[in-house]
Amino acid sequence: MSVTILTLLKRRPDMSKADFIAYYETHHRLIGERVLGPWAIRYERKHLHPMDGTDADHDFDVAMEIEFPDEAAMAECFAAMADEQTRREITEDEERLFDRPRMRIYRVETHRSALPPKPA
Image (tube, rainbow, N blue to C red):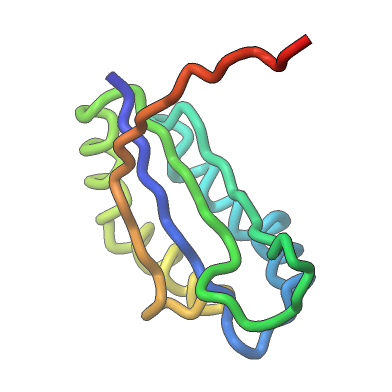
């Protein structure tokens, strides 16, 4: 059974949302792809845009999901990420992008509803 990790991330306060997304998608994402690639089966960044259109400060700017095929792959990935050089590279880049003390990481338990079809 696959394992999904959800990380909620907040951009640095001195960074605009547009600059945050641009840096994440053109630089930090590439680190993630390289580091996660041998183990993860899905790596998604879900940039959050308030439905009411406000540009007010919100708790998080992106929900990042990583899916592993199983527990063993997740454990191997986390062990590889603990390597001093890899950890330093990730941390240094996170400091350019995120408000790190506000990062929240969760293991996801999914429950899916079967919805009825749209009435004719």
